[in-house]
Amino acid sequence: MKRLPTELLFASLIILAALVLVFLTWANYRYSIQNPGGSDLLPRWAGTRLFIMEGQSPYSEETTQEIQRLFYGRPARSDEDQVLFVYPFYAIFLFSPFALIPDYNIARAVWMTVLEVSVILLVAAGLSLNRWSLSPFMLGVLLLFACLWYYTIRALINANAALLIALTVYLAFLAMRDGRDGLAGLLLALTTVKPQMVVLVILLVLIWSISNRRWILFWSFLGNLALFTAVTSLLIPNWIWQNLVQLFAYPDYTLPTTPGEIFAVWMPGVGMRLGYALTVILVATLIYEWRQAWGKDFRWLLWTAGLTLAATQLVGLPTATENYMIMFPALLMVFAAWDEQWRSLGKMLIFGSYILLFFGVWWLFLATLERGDQPVQGLIMFFPLPVFLLIGLYWVRWWVLRPEQPLLDRLRHSSRKQ
Image (cartoon, rainbow, N blue to C red; front, top):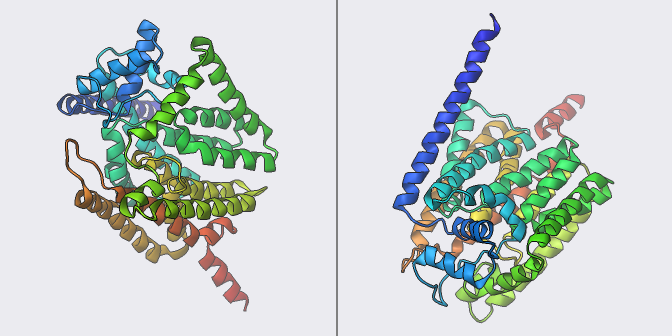
């Protein structure tokens, strides 16, 4: 009899969660009908569906024309987004459940619900990795910040898989922390559906796994990636070449996506050279920090991974602000270090950062928004978060990488000895 209240509570929570998900999906469906788009999902949904239903390659000209018809109602002009499939072919494993839904608006609504849940789980993963315990009030503020932040909303509106990829990356880190290296390797292999987001951090993990002789992690990643490639090559033998053709075409129809390209817009004479200089500085920094992480423990890896993910956005690889939530747990690392080391002052810094990063970034977006046929974010939006995070991570580097006992406690302990 004593177990009944617990069972009722658990059942009630399950029912409540299900109702919330149903309501959220309904709200997403209404939004999808009133706001056509989801520019990141549509090419993958249509490309995967055409392959499943008609056997067409998602990279074929016929598929691209059909995607353009769905997106624009006509063939795309040369100066417009060509809405190519672009992703590796094994991304069909991710998109197939949604491609089986014949109504795109319903598929988009369900997909958006998955992304919204991913944001909540990403916050939970970040808190767990950084071992940061929050009061209910602080947790509520953090969740509101994460769910309503510019970078989150932009990814949701575009139905970008980056939110799910970000969650998968940190689930892999949780698995590494707990010694489940086979699972971690599998999860990291799955994240390569958006390779530009994860290529550097995966390279770091592989180097670290070698230095710590964690061979299961190393071979699990390579083995699963090889398996994904081999299985899909049975379906379309030359898909890698077809994918490469689309990847090389991608920069021809997209807005600037690297610091060098952005600087070239602002300063045509020297912009690209400034971008190259930034690349050299960041690559040198990463080489140094990766060398420092060689043979170190998981906490050192986690800090270096945060630095690597921030640098990835500025190092010269094509990126998008929709990808920026992958840096969120690293931001929590900075906040957790401030909270641990400075107590009340740390909380003031955290709330000040919330205000700066939330209202400041939204204001910057509205102030620099370029209005034309379609609203386009200002190029300045690529810089605030990675720059803030690079500064913040070096600010807390000593605290994060040294023994876990708080600095103030160590100072008090040493003063008592004197």
